[in-house]
Length: 116
Image 1 (spheres, rainbow, N blue to C red):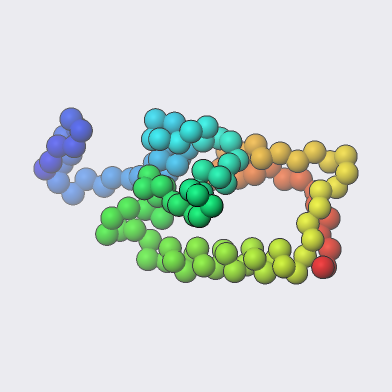
Image 2 (image 1 turned 180 degrees about the horizontal axis):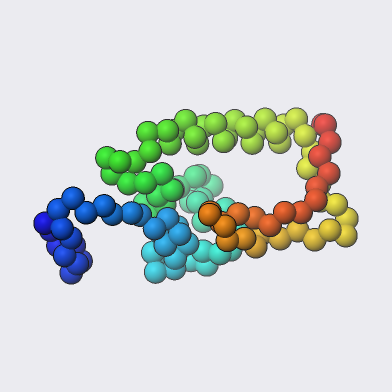
């Protein structure tokens, strides 16, 4: 058994990380967490990931696929942006407002995708 921040936790208790709370909470140190702001991850023109950014978990149970996931996403997005031109459909508004499902996601909108 142990104590953490005033809470008594029995041995063999399963603890779950609240990703929404750690990634989207001003109390966790995020300024305007619902705003789309890629600049929050930049310092002096370079990528700087804050210590409280933990989408892949923490500690020894951290996702072993984190590096693979990050590199795969980078390569796929870079390849798509290199090969295609993405444009919004005139008269069809876009938004970065999220929809709450199992995980927060963007609302859908129409786009034109053409080969470069």
